[in-house]
Length: 94
Image 1 (cartoon, rainbow, N blue to C red):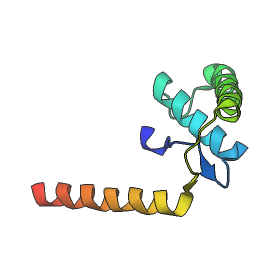
Image 2 (image 1 turned 180 degrees about the vertical axis):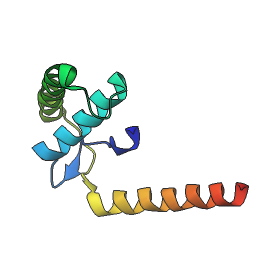
Image 3 (image 1 turned 30 degrees about the vertical axis):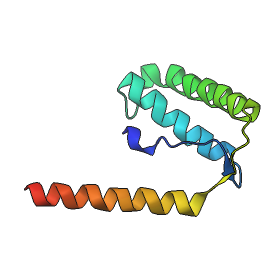
C-alpha cells in the first residue's frame, strides 16, 4: 500500500497537484487502514486526503535546496532496477 508514496521534492519538472494528491491518498490509506472507506467514513476520509494534499503542496513549495534537480526518468529507472533485484531475490528464496 505504501510503496506508491514517493519523494516529491526537487524534481525537474516539478511535482504537480495530481502527484501530490496520489501520495496524500496513499498516506491516508496507510494511516487509516482503509483502501476504500465505508460510506459512513467517506466524507472524513476524503477531507483528510484534501488537507494532507494542501499541506504537502505548501511544504513542497516552501522548501529550498542548492542540490541539482533530480531527473524523473533516472529515479524511475533506479526504482525499477531495485524492484527487479528484490523480485529476483524473492524468487531465489522460494
